[in-house]
Image (cartoon, rainbow, N blue to C red; front, side, top):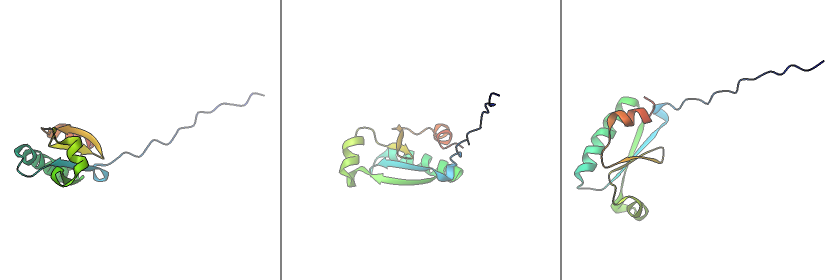
Length: 97
């Protein structure tokens, strides 16, 4: 008798909720694009429940070397999402909202 082959369902990964996400805004003081990006990040994160933080390239040499030509830079969970201008709908989508 041949054994029956059964397909077993693999558990689907738990969806990442916006509240589990971290948005990082990398900028510097006196940057008008950073001010605009901050307003978008703050608004979208408040709406979705995502956490956010801000880092200043003038206080971190590694960030300055990596991003000085692109600020403001937005990271989602440590991966670069965008730079210069932040599209609220795109950020919302990246956060799964």
